[in-house]
Length: 388
Image 1 (cartoon, rainbow, N blue to C red):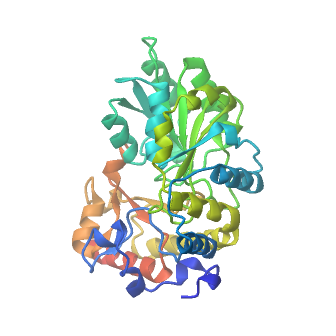
Image 2: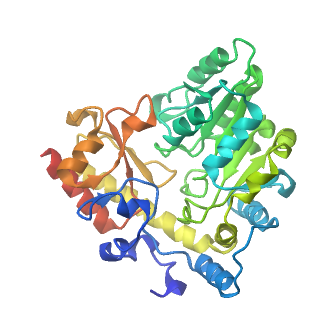
């Protein structure tokens, strides 16, 4: 494939046969007769600027340890151009192996063993797994109507978590996974105000930040009033399909610079040098490719909504402006708490089980729509046949 021309409809360029040659988790977890629409990998060719940067690095043997601030500088320019935000300060940025390991390190800085970490469920399953593994306690504050942040639930959870005078953190997903909700400036400002009132520290996973439609503006948490004491994790991995090239950035608001400065120096040894090179190239030169992906995702959201309306009208699906994930309410199908299991067993389509996303996930499934229209169409056909 000509990598120089892959900015034209990246989500339409690869055949199912080409995709099945991949050896990553998405394509090797299930047998070959299963269509995998579960884990967050996109069915796209590598963006040409990223491919060039990696090829050049390998050609000169540039495969050592990461160094420098090029990644943070690239993110600063990207944030300024895309979000009108000038708040990525290189001196308040540190490279970390990936977003979730960065989340762990940030939570270590602001909480202690046994302290509560509040999450807005249903939410990304590793939030539960990583938090409990590091000996913290998950406290749920379920999303409210329209799958938006429920400020009353948050206030109650914040108050309960700090009632004894101890430390607590709020682990926020922005944009929200699995719902695709893009939080507004007003919502984030309200979160910051509540956090200040109750002394809760906010750590934000903003990995899906570049994957927001033009109709909805992504708002960095550190940019809102009160967000100065926040800690954020960002990465190019989701937007440019670079999960196998490990690298992310931990960012601190001005009032949290001292916290980030306490992060152990050895954490910065974890990212891959090639990962840093790839992510930097994506942010610097991958804008046109990203725009093409966003266009394709918009078309896939419309396609999925039409296919479900025609073939599976009992599934409630509201296209969302963030991420490339679709949150399907399958409760009217009568498939129990785990409809994804039925779609896999009867239809040979792999989705993510909603029950793994915490309270509110029962009877739901998450579908990854970052695939070709042909695969998406066949997946819905199989799903409909599975319950027919």
